[in-house]
Amino acid sequence: MFYTVPVVGKVHWIGVNDRRKRLFENIWPLDRGVSYNSYLIADEKTALIDTIEDRAAGNYVERIESLLNGRPLDYLIINHMEPDHSGEIKAIVDKFKGVKLVGNSKTFKIVEAYWGLTENLHQVQDGDTLDLGHHKLKFVMTPWVHWPETMMTYDETDKIIFTGDAFGSFGTLDGGIFDDEINFDYFEDEMRRYYSNIVGKYSNMVQKAFAKLKDVPVNVVASTHGPVWRKNPEKVLGLYDKWSKYEAEEGVVIIFASMYGNTEEIADYIGRKIAEQGVKNIHIHDVSRTHISHLINEIWKYKGIILGSCAYNSQMFPLMEQFTRELTHMGIKNKKLGLFGSYSWNGGGLKNLVKFAEEAELELVAEPAEIYGKPSVEKLKQFDELAVKMAASVKD
Image (cartoon, rainbow, N blue to C red; front, side):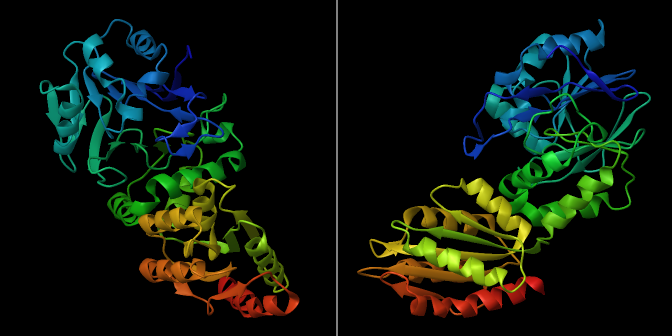
């Protein structure tokens, strides 16, 4: 990439697109790639806000040099130390002699651990400010959104909030960088998948960050991933507020584990019975076919979850077990839950799903039920109650 883009006045976007990486954090599929956003403020004093992943750098440093036009780089502000944003810190320090690193005490512990850097550090605390001339920057500590050192930088002059990973999204910026240049329908699902898988575990800390930013005027939301919001920042702020409160839409996600089709047949039956109750958003997934990140994304979107597993060596199916461990780890809340299963010679699938529900402290809408052997018309009738009660609960 050979260009930079003005955001507002003296603030410039210096980002890159990564279409080569297949897995974000080596876990989450990047079906549409990802962007790494970095920003340069060319004021009386110059400041770079966050860097990018080193493996995607290309001519990143040269672009900064071009914008500086012979001037020194005075500050590098580090909102977040995860390597997809801190990857070029050492290159910046080596290239721009004397640049001061701006961060908090937790930031600098990681800086030293990564590169042994202990000099030219400018430590800030919650509410501290930095005067660049025209721009006045204020630092807001937002720990665990989503690392312990994360903070945000607020430009009091142009009302820009540089948010690190918060308000970010999967997906490359294919020409359009700002929210008024893109069709957001293309991004919304990937933004929720990003939130639910990367930040969602720390939703209570997101709400604490919102409390700190209450009544702070925001004209631009500048994240380190995804679109820069300059036209309608209230849109992305509202979505993150909604998701971090675990607010969801009417709908049911049915996820099953089936070796030979019996449990899948139950899932389809339950889905049909829910549809007969007037619920339109019903999505059925095979846990062996759909990546866990997409399952978590849909669970975050809709109110109801129904999980079903065959028995496997007196346990639940291994991939369903893995999925439920991840749900427990995520601390999923405010969901209506239904459970079902099937077995041929010994149970275990449903029994262990019940243990998961107890550990996760999720409300069961109906008594769990399972089938011994192959489904039949008579055997399937026991799932009618689950379908009816789930439909009623998500409508409420």
